Length: 411
Ligand code: ASP
Ligand code: MG
Image 1 (cartoon, protein in one colour):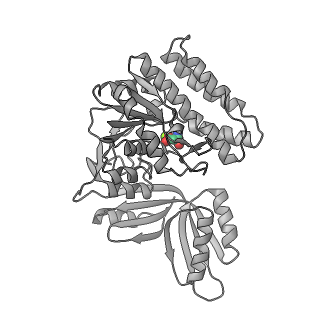
Image 2: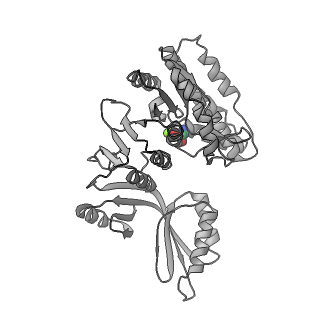
Image 3: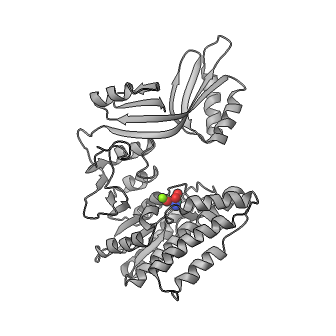
């Protein structure tokens, strides 16, 4: 069997949803499980609704807009008397309005994007004659109760998902990415862009022959083509290489996707949604000699420097305090460097979190920070790439190993 994943861009409007059907029709003899994300940018809109709800502000205009967006798609795909209209109306009418915490509310509300898109895509596929069964992913992906960042309970999830084998013998299964449920049945989510991870979980638990992520790019490229127009598509990549590029911030696949697949030796295909005749990229257990330099840009970075002021040198206890503070706030370091009297590190600039961190660190250090920075990672650099990036104007910090160069650039 195979698992397919269609992201938000691949279900963003009526034409995209028709293209999902076209792609599925190319696999008439394959057992398929299909994972879909929320349509277009609807997750961002649902996030704004949560923010408004939680702070007792009027969320109705935003809700009206997202509903109109879904109904526009319905109008193009279905007749006015099709049952999907009621299903969508129910999904909006039953939107939760309160919860024990903002994160719990977030998961109950934001997950609705995936419920809506999966209903719409499933009803459309049925309407064009494809034998599809819609399932509620929350009954299969079991997590703990960490809202917004649910940790998967693999044993339970595996048991649940294995029961789908018999359904697959008869029908194409269609389900949601990104969502699961805790042991109380409360909806949880797996972190933004987590649908790739969901698809990998289904693929791993079903021992799939492969997972294909259909994307709005021709495959995995060695740089973002919007930044570097001569970026090239990789024909193939080793699992390890792909995992590392997601670590450095390549957004083509979610960082958690590779591990479950690599553990089971299940290949991951990244293919063009618009042009399924293209081969795309295959990520699998392989060795590739001479990979071209891989360039990853990570914007919106902040460089924090902690300086000791009393003529002592930075010592391990102070480092331990810094790391502890970072870990308490769940902040990940993207790059770090130390000198005699200061320790500097680069992190994503999430303003309120960073300000909290600086408040904590200021009790022990003089703290400086710069924002608006871009971290560029050049993996498998060659001499021209090494020289080009080191000499970029505005470099304020650089670090290199035998394989990887990182430069932090002021924009
Ligand atoms: N809809 C969710 C998001 O936008 C999950 C996903 O797209 O993977 O983050
Ligand atoms: Mg998405």
